[in-house]
Image 1 (cartoon, rainbow, N blue to C red):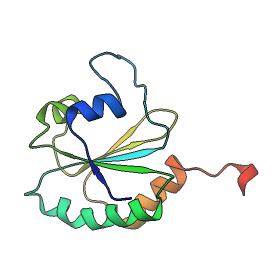
Image 2 (image 1 turned 60 degrees about the vertical axis):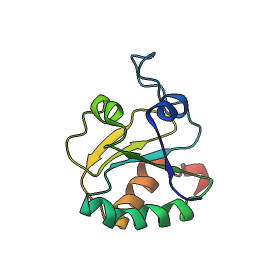
Image 3 (image 1 turned 180 degrees about the vertical axis):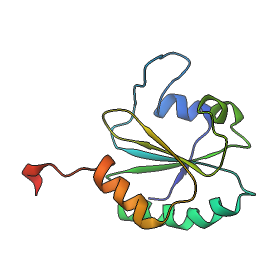
Image 4 (image 1 turned 90 degrees about the vertical axis):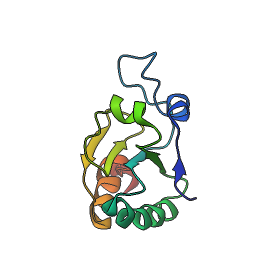
Amino acid sequence: MATKHLTTQEFKDQIFDYTKEQEWKYQGTLPAIIDFYADWCGPCKMVAPVLEELSDEYAGKLNIFKVDTEKEQELAAVFGIQSIPTFLFIPAQGQPMMQPGALPKKVFKQVIDEELLPVTQAEK
């Protein structure tokens, strides 16, 4: 499964409708990572292939979305995106976490494994 581009409306429909809800309420069933990026951003281009690899590795367990901050300025403003890339890590339950900056693959995997897809003691 490749990364999927989200418009502001798709974000409201699939992730969180900030126009109707005050408190965070994730509408998806799988954990997600949202990459706020721009086409002209060098670090964003470096991270893109890593996200594609992770999308394949975690297919069926995790969704990875991309939001073009140039096209979706309202959405970028709602999340206060000031530097790109910025990543929104969304667990299936609980509060999302924001992380600005290009991250290496091992850091993404660590966040995914420890925060988004934690293995319970019963599963070990």
